[in-house]
Length: 233
Image 1 (cartoon, rainbow, N blue to C red):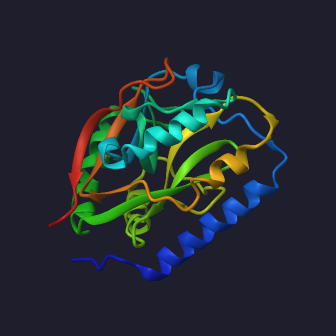
Image 2 (cartoon, rainbow, N blue to C red):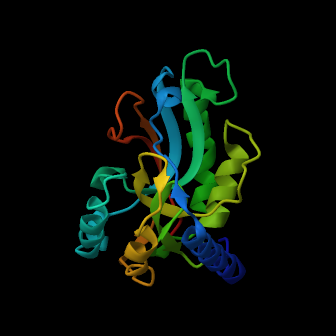
Image 3 (tube, one colour):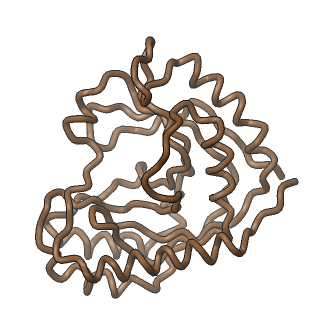
């Protein structure tokens, strides 16, 4: 079995969250962070990804209390319960005849899921705690406290991914709870989120990865499970 609980990775993640929070407090404006813009809705097929679903019940009632605070901000769009997740690896738009780097065929998607099952099973389930609240310039999210467990999981999936690219930023697990819907002055957002900055919302066990597809014609469609990849016991 592969050793979990990479303490060095966990420390690096915590430092990254602190840097993001400090940076957010210096911003004068927020940016539109919606994923479903014209470039998204104009694509054919569905979008495939590997993710960790977040059981919303584990975060209640505090998640709804945070949402109530965020709902008072007119430039924020809240994510519904069924869309709460931690992204592990994007795979691409599923089309019959891929022509672009961000496209994948149904056969290649099935092959990826089959090939990923073994490497994922080598990793043991581990606990994940979400919180406190934080923000990119374009989205509000919850920090992920996972003992460094998600980074090696992401690395294994990235090695097998159909979309080979050099990301702009190092992988940092997070659970987005809302996107900003326009470019606007930041106002009192840092003060609002500061009340939730040190709050832990809940804990659950990361026991499986899901390969899902997402329709592109609505903001928050159901995430359809194409494969379930259990972590080893």
